[in-house]
Amino acid sequence: MAQQTIDKQELAARLQPFAQQHLLQFWEELSPSQQQGLAAQVQAVDFQLVDSLFHGNEEQPDWDELSRRAEPPPAVRLSEQTPDCSSAAINEGVKALRAGQVGVLITAGGQGSRLGFDLPKSLYPIGPISGATLLQIHIEKVRAIAKRYGVPVPLYLMTSPATHDDTVRFLSENQRFGLNEEDLFVFCQGTMPAVDIQTGKLLLAEKDRLFLSPDGHGGTVAALGNSRALEHMQSRGIEQLFYLQIDNPLVPICDPLLIGHHLLAGSELTSLTVQKKHALEKWGNFAMIDGHMHVIEYSDLPDDVAHEKDAQGNLKLWAGSLAIHVFERKLFERAMEKTDLLPFHVARKKVPYIAEDGSQVTPSEPNALKFERFIFDLLPAAERPLVVEYHEEECFAPLKNASGAEIDTPEYVRQMMLAQYRRWLTTAGAVVSPEINVEISPLFAMDAAEVAASIKPGQKFEKSQYLA
Image (tube, rainbow, N blue to C red; front, top):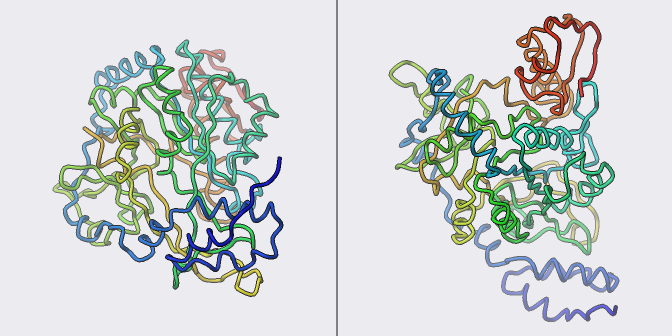
């Protein structure tokens, strides 16, 4: 098939109003296929939007001022979760799960580069004994949930251009870890270019390629529409989406308690939260501002506001955001119709690029602006938003940092996983020797009750093993 002829002048005319003609400076050095690829990237960029973002024409919230009006979010606190309250919520959640109304949405667009890992982070072998990847663990949870409630549970897995091919290949090589093909919907999020921090000029990653990065987990909304995943959800009768990010193996996927509180409150967006350990903890902060729920990033929250106390002497803004949510499908559908619901956030980053002389530059200081959307920016549009408090050790151990960091390293995550499995075993009446480790596959058990149903009373564990 003959390649389409590219008109350089037409491309230059598209770039000229935004002073971005430098993107074609190596045009004559490129092969026809490279020219084709660069032209496609240039044609896909919304230069008007990028120009507005760089010049600050896109309205950005004044978080300093907004934070001073912030109030605690509507919440179901741990202290309020009486047996009767929890039982009612669990029953409601189980009903929705058994009716096949709940799907799972996982974002898996990140690379493992911060971990010194050359593949997508989803493929990192985090299982303490098994070496199971993050992706395998989450898929096995989805399969276990389907078995528990007797219905297929569709998994919507969002990749990025950087992770898509490796992820799809890995899934194929491992037969989707037993998940039926019709229950797995893999789709790819969009990208945004990075621009020079001083000039606003788009950066070239190579002579024939723009520097593009994923448009943030807020890109989920557009990607759900573009991929027709929303139509798939409609066809399957999916009303609620349990949302998580791939890097956290402790997420209690489709926990009926969280789903049930969501349904009983008539909420469009319910979030799992934990109590912050101190005022300046590096989590987003759930807060109500002028009657709408928001997440205020820790970097946007003034220190004096972060330290404010309530009448009981506890932190006023106590609820940390862990990126675990239950969405109503109709909220995504409404967001598709109102594209301005999700603003772009601007971040200063170190971005390697091709200089005018064709050399590769690796900056030592932030040299570029990146633009991302965040999924939690749907909160202000959600009706009857709610947060439900959990114990951190039962739901949150994200893999973010390489070995040697203080927290969120492979060693830290494995330690948290093993501690959870030990609690399940001892709660179920098992006797676990102090020096040994036991890893539990979700297909064996997803909680202490299932462990109790799968082991003998008083069973002793005296050697490290993987229960699958």
